Length: 279
Length: 287
Image (cartoon, rainbow over all chains, first blue to last red; front, side, top):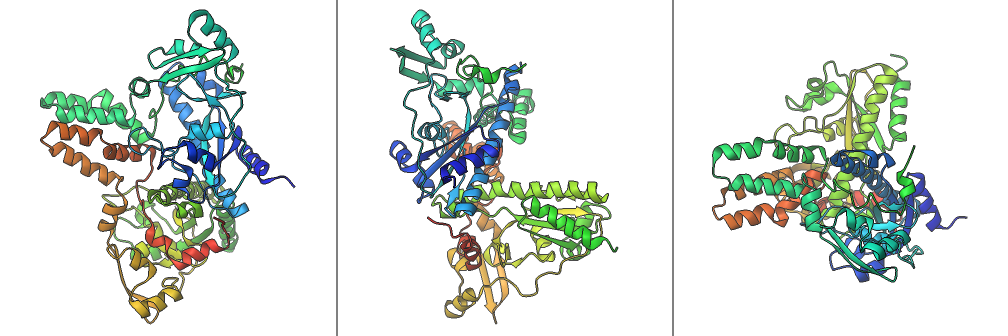
């Protein structure tokens, strides 16, 4: 009989996840801040199962960057659906408490659980220079979703060798002091590579948000503040009924263009490039 | 009419296959009798004859065990979408298979907190459960508290009968009431809930939705409106900025954007219900 680790991964992949990995909840607990640990969410947590998938390759051929973010976001939603069904699957098949933790933030920009950390600890990739996103050795950048469970499972553990920087990026850095991702967005990203390894890495999340998430919830908050502070009634009317405010409200209503609408640092990464190219 | 029992079986089988735990059928006239004007199935779909109610989307036991109060509510909101999807598919199935008009019961609210159609009233009329003291929710004997969604159709179908013996109060709750004039749900939230039990049945029941909402739906659309009003009325520009860019307002906007934590963010009165707890015992979940 197949072991439960394989059976769970096979179930997830059968539901359309591309990859699946298992991390130990206590290992993640040690690395996370209080209030953001798997055991803070489910006290009996023993394992964290992480699933990942790629956006459609066609996403990269969309010329309008706003639509890129929108299409990719839908792929993410599909992954969440699999993760919450996985919680049901584990409870009904194995009888262990399980849950799909909310992927949203507690307050401004602080996710309840760092999904990227969980993916790293489940052996699904390592941090990259591109926005500190997790880079899978085969597929490159993936979206991730998780299920926390009280079921004790053998963890996959983190990868031994980091995926980023790729050999071609190391060569490029040695020649001109940059990589494809840093070259695409030198304002948000910076980093240094030595002996083929990342020595320092900086991702300016606040700058990225103001540029790539221009119709996100914080953007709407900014506009509401702007309208509230405006003393000229005609100008206030223009702000509230104008195109930009309309787009932000529509984004909120239709759940489109809420998150990353740029992804330019992701696009030139050589890892997993073949999966982003079709006929 | 001779083929109707087959039709009902087909409809229920389809719902089960698509993830419903239970399915029941109610006549539109029986719901119309109790629902207030503007909230009757016959007002939503002209010529409506039957309402099919699907129940499912039970919260994971893991979510119940989470100490973070908003997690069960969040999981519940995710699960509700799943039940709506079943009803949506079912409406499509009825139109294609039986050539009758069918619509998925609208989930929108008409005004503040007034659903267009009360899916829980439909569930009661379809014999899926009875009202509980806990938040006036529908309690099913086997599955405890479920989420419900309805399909309204012009197809005449044989109705299921409402349950005669109320599921709530459970025998242990009756015993507790006789000893201490309270029940597990009343005890856990005495502000929102009030009730009286006599001879083993509920005599009076009150669920104060307004108190409940201000406590458990702190990131709902109403909360957003309240904060916005306060911020607009704030004279101090620095305070106004703090309110509009602060964590609390951010959370309410995110809730709307991602459709999370908009409704129940605490279900403490459901958690302690013995019928609800028994519904998980088959699962033998291990912590």
